[in-house]
Length: 227
Image 1 (cartoon, helix red, strand yellow):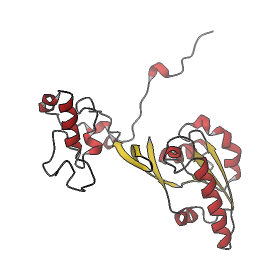
Image 2 (cartoon, rainbow, N blue to C red):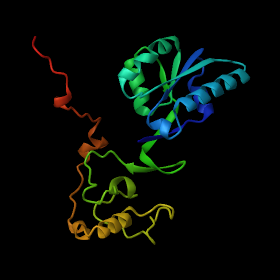
Image 3 (tube, rainbow, N blue to C red):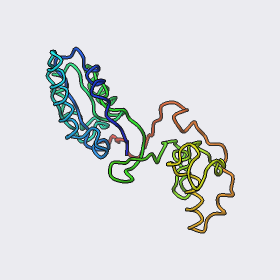
Image 4 (spheres, helix red, strand yellow):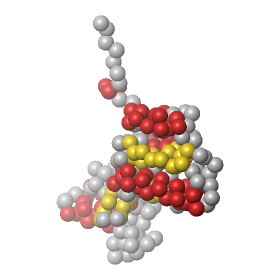
C-alpha cells in the first residue's frame, strides 16, 4: 500500500489561501488504511479548515467528498460537478491521486493535503514500515522475500556492509539489519548457499532513474471487433 501523512493544518491553510470555495477530496483505498485521507479524515480536515479560516476572520466555504480510488479516472466522475464549483481542490490522496484529479479535470486547481512517504505495510497498530522501493527489477526470489533495496539502508545486493550489531543497522539501533533478516530467512529454508551467487549491478533504468515508467498490457487493451 501507499503510505502517506497529512500536511500540517497551517500548510493546508496556506495552500487554499484566497479561495472562496474549497473541495476536500478523500480517497477510500491506501490512505484510508493509514488514517491519512479517508472519509473520516476528509470530514475532519474540512471542518478544521472552516473553523480555522473563520477564526482568522476570512471564512472559506469548505466541503468534502470521498471517492473509492483517486488513482483511477472512472472513480472521479462522481465529483465532477463539485470540482467545477470549487476554486481549489485539496486532495487527501497520494501524489498519484493529486495528479489524476488534475489530469481528469484540467480546469481545476488541485493541491496536495498529504505528503506521500513510501510503499509499505502496517506492522502493528499505528505503525507503518517501508517494504518496497518500486525499483522495477524484483529480487525477492533471490533474497527470501526480504527486499535489500528498500530495507537495507545502503541498498546492498550482495551481503551486509559489516556495520550492523546484534542484528541491527548501524544507522539506528531500532532498525533491523535487512541482510541479517535475509540470512536468517534463507538459513531457515536451507537455501543459504544461494546467497553465494553474486548479483550483478542492478539495472536502474527499470527504476525511476530511467524516467517516468509505463506498463502496457496489449492483452488488456480494447480490441475493435468488426461487425
